[in-house]
Amino acid sequence: MGMQTFLGPTLAGTQKNTNTAVVTSNTPSASFLSSYGTGNSYRNTGAGDALQFINLPTATLTGYGTLSATPVVTIPTYSVTNGSATTNYPIVIPAGSYIDNIDFNVTSALTTAGTAITIAVQLIGASGSTYATAQTLANVTLTSASLPPVGSYSLTNAASASQYSPIIANNSATPLAMLLNTGPTDALLQLSITGTGTTPAFSAGTIGFAFSYVVRNPDGSWYPVTPPNPLSPPIPATY
View 1: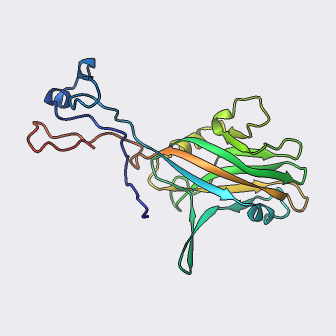
View 2: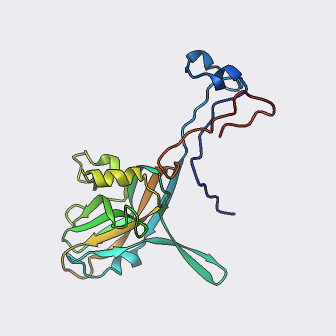
View 3: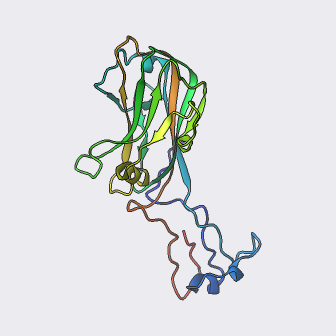
């Protein structure tokens, strides 16, 4: 199986161009709507979602050892082996993407050393870019008295009173810009982990993150391609 990549939006649908009045009209109208399959109407023109996942197994968590106020900064990866060669791939969010959700997944129960551990979920861009310095999008706070059970916890739970909604969105313009990620370069996931003093900070558990985002053009725009006017056969697809 191969890997498929896109340099711009993958549209969920396009404006059908078999009806010249629809394509050339500057005035949207419900009269251009009709039953699916008729081929002469508006269609969904939303951009498609993408998902990327990363997993931190027990060996990775216990390998952090003693945590302190000095962050342990790590770029988590997943490994792909081809013959004798192994390549580590990070989560890379394409330039211009709209990040609509980040999930924190606990896939096996955590055991911590009892003091607060904070995992800052960050994105960092290329050197010399707007986001050359890592920006924190959300924080996960873990203590032995308040550990989430196995489950998936979404950034959208930030307003919940439940102790099992550990991801909290930062209320500032800079993380918002990263969520919108309208910049000239891609950005990759980075974790910055802090804690206080007991060895090991983690002794059991497996966690992961899932990023959901909409792929757009690097400047943040998305749209169907404008068809030629006047139309002439063969009529091109507008995507």
